[in-house]
Structures are given as structure tokens and as C-alpha cells.
Image (cartoon, rainbow, N blue to C red; front, top):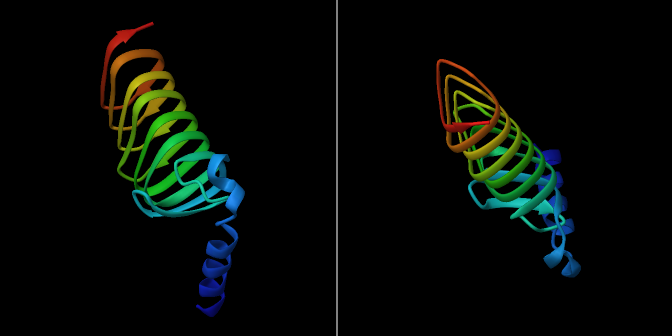
Length: 135
């Protein structure tokens, strides 16, 4: 337990450099929504790995793995979640969860309920699949 606490403190100290305001994060650890730490400290834009219980990220390039839910604005890569994976605008890659939702998808939805509210270029694999337009 002491090692975990020491690692958490070390991660928080190293994640606050002054030059990180315009950079993207390579590792983000999320507890809930925007309650997170990242290296370097930019919890909004991740180019790498986003791990957590339930996370919200504006731009993701890489992988997002969450136990409960994963939410992004723009996603390029893979988003895996235990309950829901939601991309509010454009997703490119793989979304895998019992419930997957995106506005526009180029790639694949894998889950029980898959919804693309605008355009789908790719595949949806699940019990219920919906897309406004399939190209």
C-alpha cells in the first residue's frame, strides 16, 4: 500500500511541469470524469493510454480502457469499457462495450447495443445495431 501511495504522489509531482499547457498526455489515469492525473499534465488531450474507472477525454489518439464508462469528443484508436463507450463526435477505430455510441464512426462497434447517430463507415456487431447512414 505504501508503494502505491508513493507511486501516486510521484506521478502527481511529475505531472505538473510548466511547459505542459500545450502538450498532449501520454498517460492518463482517471478516477471519474475529469478527476484525473496525466503525464504531462493535460487531462483533455491524450496521445497514448487512458486508464480509469470512468473517464472523459476531449481528444484521444491511442487506447482508452475504463471499468465503467469511457467518453470522448474525438477518438482515433480503441475505446474499451465495462458498460458504455461514448464518442460525442467522430470515432475512428474500435469501440467495444455493452453499449457503444458515436455520432460518426469509421471502424467498428462491438457490443450488445451499438448506435451511430449520423454516419457509419465500417461494421457494427451486436444484438441491436443502429446507424442513420451506412457508407
